[in-house]
Length: 75
Image (cartoon, rainbow, N blue to C red; front, side, top):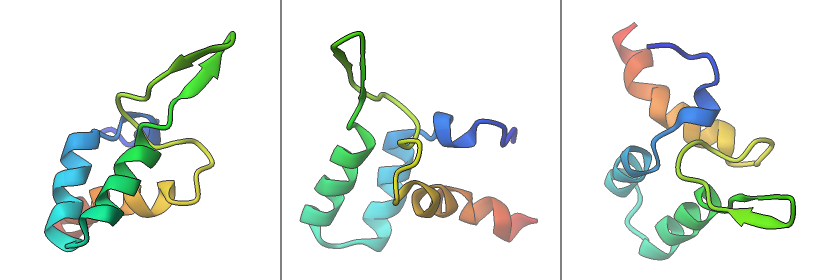
């Protein structure tokens, strides 16, 4: 697995599937999904995020660590 630019390549659906196994509260899951899809403004136009975690987002390191947990256990 190539970890370079990992934060930019996190698959939202895979991450949400992992979180659904750990988090029962659907409201929390909905907020996390919205955080992931927050998007960016480029030239005054909104671009929805399809993958990755927001750069500089306070939850991004935590969410990425959840994704990497299985890999860490294998190593």
